[in-house]
Image (tube, rainbow, N blue to C red; front, side, top):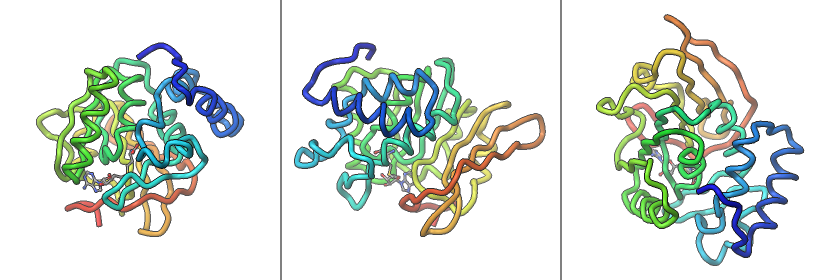
Length: 217
Ligand code: SAM
C-alpha cells in the first residue's frame, strides 16, 4: 500500500502525524508516511471511527485495546526497520500495528491469544491487500520457534520480563521492543543483541494491557 488515499479520514491522519507524532519527536520518515497511509479508522469499531485518530487508546472488543498512535509510532521507530527484516509481533489485537509493520518490513509473523481478534485482523489486512503477514493464534510469550530467527520482535502488551524464548529467537544484532514492568505501568525497553550480550535502552514510561501467558501474567 503506497498511496496516500482520500477516504474521508485523510485530514485526521495527517493532523495526527503532524501534531501527535512529528511535533513530539518521531523523526523516521518511513514511520510517519506509513501512519499517514494506513486507514486507522478501519481498525476500530464502526461507532468509534470518528475518534480513530485521537490521542488515546480505544477499545476493540474482547476487553482489548488498539494502542495510542504515538505509542505505535514510538515502538515502530525504535525497531529501526529498513524493509529487509522478518518481524515477530506478540499481540495482534486489531492488526493496526501489524499493518504498520507490514508496510515497513519484509515479513511479519503476528501471534494473538484471542482467536476472534486474530481472525478479524487477518480479514482486515487481507482486504487492504497485505500479503506479507502470517497470523497465528497462541501464546506469543513462547515465540514461534519454527519461524525463528527474527530480526525484530515487538510485544504490544506488557510483560514482567523479556521471556528467554524470545531472546533465543532473536537474530544477531536484532532488536526487541517491549513494555516491561508491573501490571499497572511499565517502562518501554529496547534491547539490541550484540555478540553474546544485550544493549538495553529505556524509552520511557507506558501503560499496556498485560500479556496473559506462560511467560506473561
Ligand atoms: N497492537 C494492537 C493493535 O494495534 O490493535 C494492540 C494490541 S493490545 C494492546 C494487546 C493484545 O495482546 C491483545 O489483543 C491481547 O489479546 C494480546 N495478548 C495478550 N496476551 C497474549 C499472548 N500471550 N500471546 C499473544 N497475544 C496476547
